[in-house]
Image 1: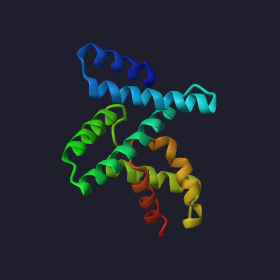
Image 2 (image 1 turned 180 degrees about the horizontal axis):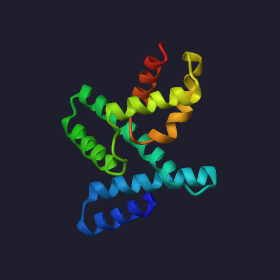
Image 3 (image 1 turned 60 degrees about the horizontal axis):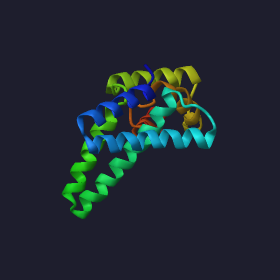
Image 4 (image 1 turned 135 degrees about the vertical axis):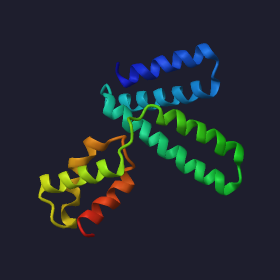
Length: 148
């Protein structure tokens, strides 16, 4: 079952059970997917759907930080629920050891020797870790591995 089909099934279940907040979030996910499909005139595969969900997850985390700074506990709680629901669609996160091993393999496979080669390492790693780790933290770890 594709990720889009799973999201559609979850939407139907949310409608049946009357979960209005969850239903609204799932409809936002579907709108984001549809928007990208229309803009790019393609049908998104699971990897591209994951990218849409990751973008929404990042936006929710940023909004939650701003709500915390503004003292809006009600909106912080709502965003925390949304983050939990969005995380439900992401694959299992990589452990530190698995991530370190993948970075080491990518550095060896690309022949990276300095910071100039960081783009090559990122290009090699991105499809392998998409949705399974924070890409910003990954960038920092690659810099450290390349001595930057």
